[in-house]
Image (cartoon, one colour):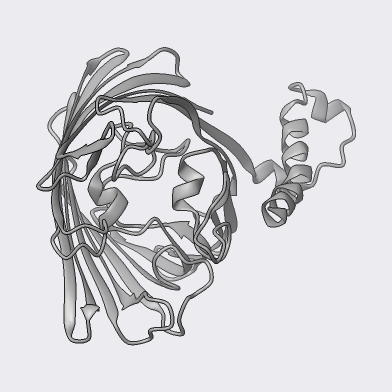
Length: 380
């Protein structure tokens, strides 16, 4: 517990300086001497808050929803995450910058924290996390080669860990988000825009969700983004490298495909497909694999209201990702209302299904798990 406290204490003076600077009335800087460093004028401070209440139709005796990512607690109010983002963007060649995301809450940090930073050797994570922390430099190569070094969220998946600069169309997360892909990487990445329609990114790092590597090998990943029309974007992601503790040979491979089609100003259609394999995961010479597909649709007729839907299927027939050899499926409908420019409220109506009785239902188990989740988001 001491390490998280020290990390937050180090950020307090800088946060106070930013707040003090923002509080100066317009025109006061011209009349009043100030000791504010010049570089502080280029730093921004943003925040994000997510709080929710979840209720499961199965009434699990343990109070836990099965195979859920962040909404694992049933029948309770929660502060899922409060995030502060301090950053100085780097955009033009020869510019440098940084970004630091500090997260606190009883849902997201407990799941997404990386081993070796805010997750201890026993695998336990608490309510604090350094979600991202990286330095940036734009090398003067062509239109600018953007280089980041540190810890950053993964480039895989249609869905994201929520923050002030983006969140998902659903309040709950898909099985693909929770079990098919990693959350974060620690290492370095380089991205380059070949044209307004095509860009690429390469990354090398410790692997999946490890701030301190658990073996001596590194994982290599990449991304290619292509937008053939303003309405259609296709993203191909990949990563390969050994991920098991002390094993420098057995490789885990992941292929991730994303497509987003904006059918006019009101309708957005999305798709996400994942396929992963891991060598010798079952036994020497016996590899394991997992795969899944999710479809997304969002209708925003204008004004303050919108409705979104998600349907998916995830196959973990070797049981290496969920711990059970099974096929999972779910369907989610999410109506939402924006009450103010900064405040959004929404509800997830969700039904899960497995081909086995894996969902806790009172004191027994069932093959279905219906839930309702209410959520409020505030960003600034």
